[in-house]
Image 1 (tube, rainbow, N blue to C red):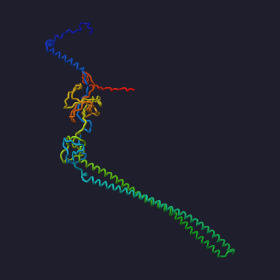
Image 2 (image 1 turned 120 degrees about the vertical axis):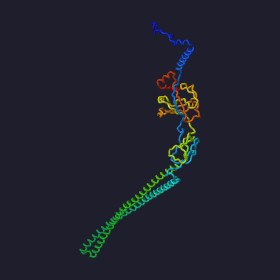
Image 3 (image 1 turned 90 degrees about the vertical axis):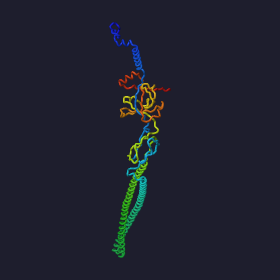
Image 4 (image 1 turned 180 degrees about the vertical axis):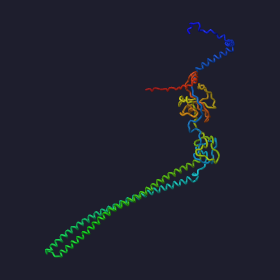
Length: 448
């Protein structure tokens, strides 16, 4: 290593090999050696050329919005095919009739079903109005009963007051009669005493006895009047209880009839709502016999055929391709590349059947590719074991060809970091993921 010893030099020369001597002596072998050396040097130099890492994907042309993709026209109800209004390849406007079907269910076969149901609705509405009138009449009747009850109670209370006054009057008359008896008794005793002394004749005594008996007769009559007045008071009080009971019974019956009418009214209203719902359903069902286009487009394929065939609800009738749509590409990437894909990134796209020259590592010298922007990334793996990515045209670059059809093949390249070729070869051989290069956002300081 330090060239101190003479033994460090090789003692054997290559000239002793016959092959070496042969190659050195022939001119064309010398030229071949130069070519090999030149290619080796060129290859070595190319290993240091820049290479743009990328993520490739395969997919197909689709539409950007779900409502612009090919769809099937379905029958909401079951029926029998009666007439076709279109054929494959026809252009239809939104609302144009595709097919007419007839009814096959027994409960809907009545041609006057809608009008009959409308008549039932009107009849039930009349019943509701009748019940409403009955409720109003019963409310008026209840008010009349309450008013009559008040009058009857006022009349009975007046009778009670009259009875109290009569009792008071009869009591005063009874007191007066008792006073008269006392006076008559005193006069009779005095007359008897004076008669016994010879001062009064016997006729005076008999006269006083007669007055005493008349007073005693008056007190019995007056007591009868007082008892009769008290009995009238009791009868008046009983009359109040009877009036309360009688009119309470009438009011209870009127309220019961009112609540019965209200219950019938609510039941009739519920039946009206049910019948109106049925009427609306029948009217809508009648419009469903004509299967119409949900949007403007071209009839691609008729999935049903013939006349007289029956179809079930939800059966696809035909497929339609919308006439107005925004084109996009759906591509699929491997799970290892998914973390490097982000929404808003730029992607290069080229289409099957379109003239293209692609150098995946040198996108600047590629020809026939179009710019795209990632607008959606599916977070759930697809059945093919890859993740779906939706790409829309880049508005800042050339427009995609108008001749592209939905479903045609497409390939994509998501551009990443730029590295030497030798590094890319080393990365691929070792199975490492590409480098993700993200430009730093430019920040500007606000001037104060």
